[in-house]
Image (cartoon, rainbow, N blue to C red; front, side, top):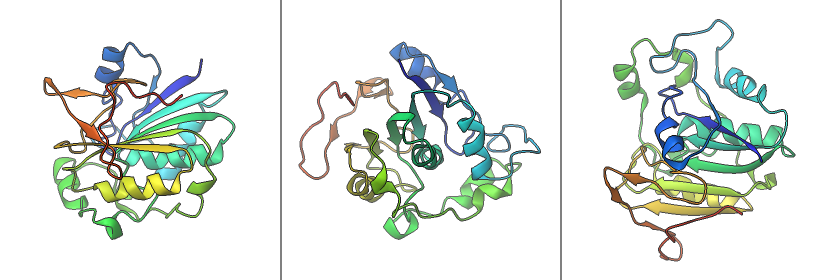
Length: 213
C-alpha cells in the first residue's frame, strides 16, 4: 500500500489535514512548512524548492500525495521529479503550476502577511509555470475546487484538468480554499452538511464516493 503524504498550503501547519485523515481513518506523513504561517523557520529552508526537497526525502517507494493550495505546487513538482513513485494525486484548490493570476486569481500576499507577519518573505516570490511539463504526468489526479475561492478560482482547476492526462475535476458549490478531502474515495463534509460537487464541463453531480482507481 502506498504511503500517503499530506501537504498543507501556505499556512504551513502539519495539523491542516489531520482532522480529515482521522475522520477517514487514514495514516500518513503530515508535513509542516518551516518559516510559513506560524511555523518556526529553519536555516536550510529558503524557498519552494527546499520544501520540495524536504518532502522528497520521504519518497523511498510508492506514495500518494494529498495537497492543498500552495502545497499543490509542491505535489506537482514531486510528481514530475518522481514519475515512477508518485502513484496518485489529490489536489485541493491548488494555487500554482499554472498562471493563476492570468486565470482570475486574486492578489493574496497583503492578507497573508497581515495574518502571518513573521512568515518568510520568500513565499511571495514568483513561481514557475509548469504548463509545458504537466501533460507528461501519468499519475491519476483528483482535483477538488470550491466555486467561492478568490485565490484559486475554478478556472485554475479547469486548466489543470485540461493539462493533466488522467485527471477528474469536481467543484463544490459555495466552498472556498478550505475544501478538503475526507479520504480517498470520499468527499468532505464541511460545517455539518454535505456539499454538492459537480463536474464543471458536463454539469454531472459527483457520486457520494469518488475513487481514483
